[in-house]
Image 1 (spheres, rainbow, N blue to C red):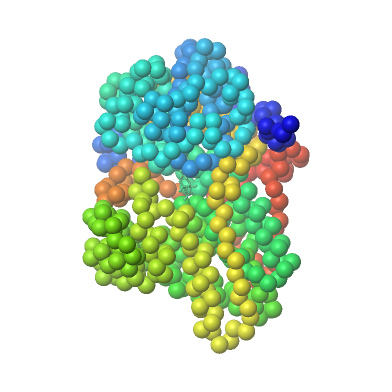
Image 2: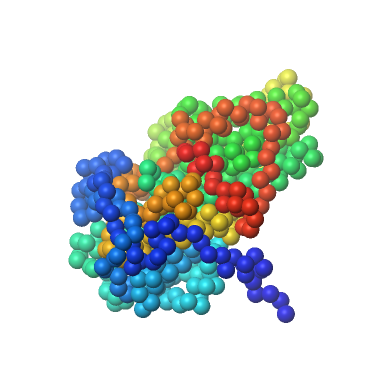
Length: 548
Ligand code: FBP
């Protein structure tokens, strides 16, 4: 007979995630301590106006004490946006949390993301089902989706669903856009006097959902370590065969946190950091010339090989392309249908260019057709360019190749292979860190639910100090917000945390990259280890370790 589960799946189902001390005795032994009042990341007056009921609430932390409000809770759970390792552990944390308050508590998993909540489609999770998914990767227990909650009809349906199922709380597990959804829904429920709290949990492999209180989203640790394992293997192959350059695009929609973390773990010859490109106002040509300089310098030493990391979001950070995308977002709203119905890419470019400034129209037509076509593709439901579909790694190989041909002094060879690592890491078995952290976030969400704290996002702090020192609590989601232009309109959204160019992680990278460019200083981190010495199995990301 064939197996139904791998040996690792079997073993991971038995792993008991670690919790912060305050949560270890269950919800009946947790009380809430209120801290300082908060304000939004920017645009305070506008955000306060949009979130009158939930704006400015205090940060809360959880401590041991006798809870007087323990009762059976019915909690609805939604997995939203891109997959991230640890999603099932948030659900098991919520499940164990509410059951510790009262075994009659129920957890309903809404199917396929926020759309499942709107449509009232769910599966009730029981012990046997939950046990099968503990510490597993993926979101397949209930699946995810990217529906944006924005219409009155959608909100009214959520009210119906919450009332019909007696929901005490809805937990939305998601990234910046999904937690924005959660905050908007929380505000709507208060306005409509619906007795159901809405809380969020910070998820995204991109690593960009963080602030002073949310030190990292779950999933970043495992995804970065998975890519680092693959890139370490590629670096060793490059160093053995000594004939290929490997250009690797790494997922992470905007910020370059994944690229930076993976660079610290593997020490490649080149790693572009989008935030630095933007800060230096570099043009695409300047980026290409800098890459070609490294290829040429290595070729002088007869090293016609290397590894270059390219963050997925790079294209959006090159100033001229950033302005182009901003203009395109507005322009496409005006001529979407005509662009769609035009057959050839040059026709599409001609149509949209009528709505662009001369400069942006020029930039658009200067790009290879395949890239221009990708920039004209549909935005996701939140108005984001789908950067994972833009083949920046191929564009750069082509442009670096052309640049080297123009250099009479270049006597080396440039044979380059392209890779894109994204989906390879999003559903990996969560590392011990992500298993523990996601479980703790879920448990904290259950505490927020028990204490009727709506409009909050679950937060666990002091992450680099080991679970015994973690501090659990929550922060008002409005605290993370600012106004941004989406689909041609100003919208409240969670501000993305970009790589801090003055931070310690970037400094270590910047201090060492010239040496990494020329030497083969590669580190080979290998696959994530789940069993063995704690310094290997429980290691946090370099980003956290260095305090970035
Ligand atoms: P979230 O922000 O929803 O966590 O998604 C992250 C991400 O993995 C990005 O890194 C990537 O650009 C995007 O999702 C790809 O999503 P999709 O597969 O839906 O196109």
